[in-house]
Length: 315
Length: 297
Image (cartoon, rainbow over all chains, first blue to last red; front, side, top):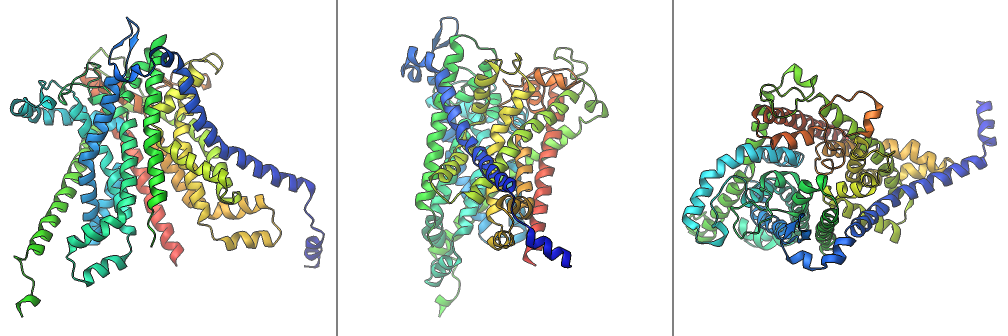
């Protein structure tokens, strides 16, 4: 006992230990700045690699849809249009479905056990790799929807959106598989923000005689709106960058068409298809397309973060 | 007197019924395809599982008789995810330690946290494009072009934000009293972090990291033009510098083949991939729930 006490008394922090402390702190600092370095590195590298194509085509690249390695003419309009079209339309379908499901999970329509099972099941689905979804889309979804698409074309063929004869893979299938992918994201984020709305608000609304859905529409949804919006924007970013499932089912054709029933293209599927075997100015043009995709998703993501910060719940 | 009872025909009650059934329909539409998807993968893929699958090389598409196995892709996925973890875990945990333990909420840490969120939203194929420009087109890795090593690096970019975030959040949950106590008895900052705060946040960090690894294992887009694909067994360390197959890329390549045998192989690979990812997810969920329960006591 006595020995131990003296041990404590004589214990001083050695210089080497102080140095280790400083080194440890600085290592952590350097490691954390890696994030910034990688992020800036990605932006700079993709930008400089696309410089050649950028100086040659300028902004014309964004509005022409010629993609011809033989003639050395490049324009990414079809792919950009496809990216925006598939992501916005899929989101349009996903939002009501996802928010509706989230409301179903957070209200007490069925016992809590069932709701929790449904909730965690939906979350698990977010973990399924998109390449597997693509496989499923090719072999199950496409044959399943074929007759329906033929029906759409026969009866609504006069609308430009359904004007082409459906032959296998097309943009509409890509939109549907994106819905399956985005649903878990939107549902779980909407559920979390609905759960964060304080019970007091609900009780107050019930107390002054509001019905259940009056409460949901006028009190709970507005209170949870910022969280839901942020989730929707995150899903939009995911949809724009999604590669595998879309590449496998969209048909990969650079010919521009208004019809949803014709094969299409997105920026990411163009990258996935051509990057491995491209050379010369095609590579530079692909980098340009990648740069456009990155800017799109950066804008959406930064806007989502700003939204969360600006309108986060204040109760 | 009547107004005290529930009246079915009141417009508010009819409206409530209508919206309730609408949300039930939403939930059904959302969940049915998902259930259908999972059962289909498990049944269709599970029926293709044979012992040879795990030991053979895949045969090049074209001979329609026998597709072979997925051994190189299975090993490749393990190797590539391991490389990604070796890079992303130290960097991410170190960065998370800085954010949670050292930073004082200044401009730098706010910028890094912002950067983490932005990096998490960068499309996965961009990570592949970046590594292609940085490593493959420059042949910086000892003159080799497409390689498993480059694929692992591309995946590590996707894992990094997850690891930093879970470390940061896990460490923030550790009560400050523990830190004060440790510093109070004279421990230095790094001893406090390594011996007190990190161990007490270990479980939540480990859960997050494992989930990040599981997600990375299924990523395809960053690999299709960094690691490419290979039909041959991985025999030694030297193979790290050559094209390497992975389950995800195998599914992509073989799903697009017109031959039935290759398609079946893609289903089998999906089964293995989905089953392992789902079981990791379920296991870590159970673990997290268990930890929460013990903490409350």
